[in-house]
Image (cartoon, rainbow, N blue to C red):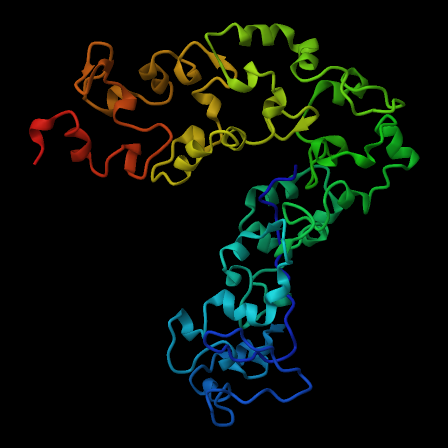
Length: 436
């Protein structure tokens, strides 16, 4: 599945007509046509006062009017189409909230019942992509083309730029495949759902592509389970990690033959199919004291892709994203944490946990929590506070004082991942005699 945070370009189409003035507690009226005189201002301004007079103080706008793309209200001298000349409850003397002002003319940029919307649109922040007055770029964009998208989607942009095998639509522009505001057709702002989007350019029934897909009717398949739509360093634009049977063109090892009535049906269901190659590893997993639920249920595909992946181990994505499908509360805690725990920030849950299971609680890789933290942190130099097997936690004699006694490994709203707002509040949990 294409990464949710794709490189996007906002292409808001601006009307050629001046904006109407939003009326309080009522939907704003439609803007007047460029061929008809605008309606009388409810402010009863003198001629020129809605825009021309503004330039007497805001002289810098004379230079803005020389830019390649000028917002219609600015070009027509209708400053009061967006601003109140006297006072406002909103910044910049806007007559309403930013998005509501924009929606006066551009309400239709997001389709009804959209399946996906761009985050700046959800956040009601049009100016993140557009300059409301004028710009050197089309549609008043603050940057040109893919450069704008790259300002938020750096990872995808850099990977696409350095890919050995580049995808032509990406080079032409992100909007080749994505709608920058919202899509009624598919997730990830795609203009059409996959594979329909891909089939617009790739005729998979042609002899060449049919041969490459070993005769399987991939016209009905999800192309992104094998291919990276933004570009790849692997020939055929495959994702970075390819399942060996796929890499060797041995699709029939897992699926029924291409000539079958059900060519995509697997030869066996679930983990039974994986066991034909990974039996020793699976036996070892199930022999552990604690087994991760997907493993116990034989749901290998809950975490792994069967064909290819951008991540090692054929994970469906970044480990944090994969784990977050079930452990959303834990991932959310890290997202709001003031101090980020490096393994989670880097998407490496496996630094501390074994995803398949183990003998330690929470599938920790080491039974001894202090030793596990010590693989990254020199705790002996970090603090003089006694910790270890001989130091009992005064709050619970069944526990020892260790790293997790004072720190929350997945983060907290306070510095250094401590559970209290201050070190004093933290210490007096145990040292009650020092409370004030």
